[in-house]
Image: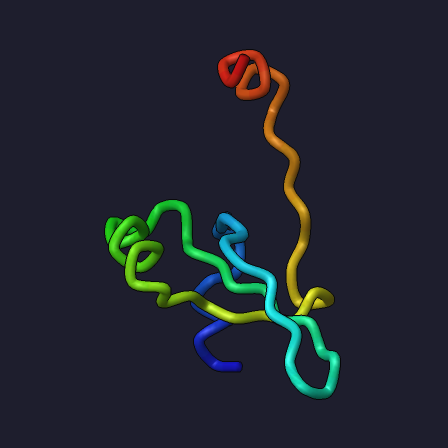
Length: 68
């Protein structure tokens, strides 16, 4: 996917998990530093990837403490 090349190194939030008729899992994400992230979320417009195309990034320790 050509659009995926522009997203390399950027973080995203997993919004939805879809399973199609062939039992393939698709991850619907919004891009964290996108100024239109809220609009994309509210209108259900996501970037879609297969699970093997994404990497899980855990929050830093100080971000976990801020969330408490």
